Picture 1: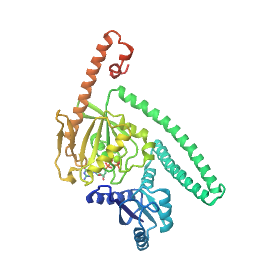
Picture 2 (picture 1 turned 60 degrees about the vertical axis):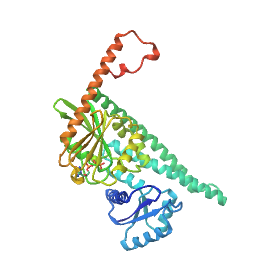
Picture 3 (picture 1 turned 45 degrees about the vertical axis):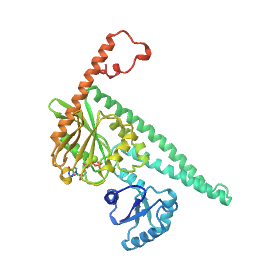
Picture 4 (picture 1 turned 90 degrees about the vertical axis):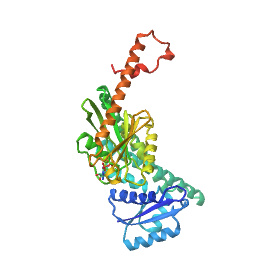
Length: 395
Ligand SMILES: Nc1nc2c(ncn2[C@@H]2O[C@H](COP(=O)(O)OP(=O)(O)OP(=O)(O)O)[C@@H](O)[C@H]2O)c(=O)[nH]1
Ligand SMILES: [Mg+2]
């Protein structure tokens, strides 16, 4: 049983419906990590308090509710500094988890594949090491103040840090090997000239449900956050003559811990390397725009900002909308409204994907044509020997 504390910083312009979604998201995060909610408290602040993040009055209120509900854990929806976490735990006498540790915890529980497990371990160690470093400078300052020599605690932390450093290096090494295998597979796929589409989006938007509907397979879907951690790819046809390779990927979330993005680089790279990103959006939630912004932010961070996109507004059955397409001025379909669960609108989506795939084939043919012409022309001067030939077919 956990007591949930949602933090609304006044400066951050979140509307009240979004704050409600924040509370709901925190509950889902907690439940996805295996906690049941014993109640929720909303803390409004202008800025975090340096010592405990929350104010005195709020801490008192939490203490009372802890007592009434008998919960043994407090989950705070913020990234707490090690000092704040320690102070809160001391003050409340129970374990305090913050948003980052909660997300890392869920990832640790979900990791299935060898790569996924290694990535999660790396992320946790990286997170831990930043906390040890900060904790250490904190100790050092204390030592300076009271004039003691290096104590055993400090030596232990030094040792811990060195061990973590070694393990991090080892994990990175192993992940690099797995990554190069993945690259080889990806190259093989490219050689067969498949159009590669990655489903990306906020966690719980319905990516896996859509993946299953389009590929007629049975990837794990659930009403929980981060149901999917590993990338799954499958070939499917969106029109009789248009095959593509569709990938289902890990979901994103607001304030995704940095250590996770870093550790999951290889997995996320799958998205960055796609020919088209299908951004799946849950059209039924109030914080739809904020979720889309969060996804854009992560895509930028993993270097996928320039990959062509198409938006899928999902769950139209809940949002009470009808299936539809939205077109850009040039006539290209930019967004499709569907229900992955009922299948409503999927024909429109297949049509949109087929259109994008055909466009790419046409572009490639044009590029090949240019490449052939360039090859027939006299050899250009070295500084002019640039791309076109590279876009041609692999020999
Ligand atoms: N009502 C409704 N529910 C849907 C629809 N599509 C998906 N869902 C539900 O939304 C929940 C999340 O679906 P998933 O497909 O697991 O979502 P996801 O984006 O893969 O989530 P993660 O893997 O956790 O990032 C499940 O309970 C689905 O049944 C839809 O069109 N309508
Ligand atoms: Mg999924």
